[in-house]
Image (cartoon, rainbow, N blue to C red):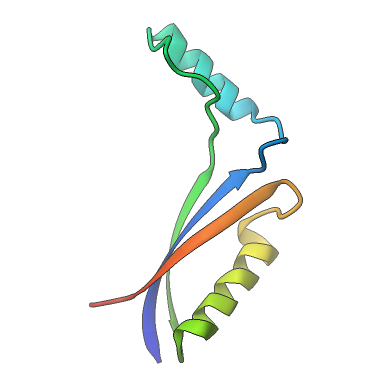
Length: 86
C-alpha cells in the first residue's frame, strides 16, 4: 500500500446563496476593508489514506466526497493528491 495525502476543497456552487460569506463580507467591511466583494466561505479537509495506487486513491476520494464530505446538490469539490513522503 502507498500512503497519500489528499487536500480537499469544498465550495458552494455559484448560484447557491452563501449566508456565511455575506456575514464575513459585512464583518470585513465593518472593519474598514471596503474594497472587497463577493466573499464565499468553504471547507478545507486534509486526509491521509492508503491505497494500492493513485487511481484507487482518487476513486476512494471521489466516493468520500460524494457520500459524506460534500453535498453534491449545492457544493462543488476538488482535491489534490500527493504521495506521502513520511
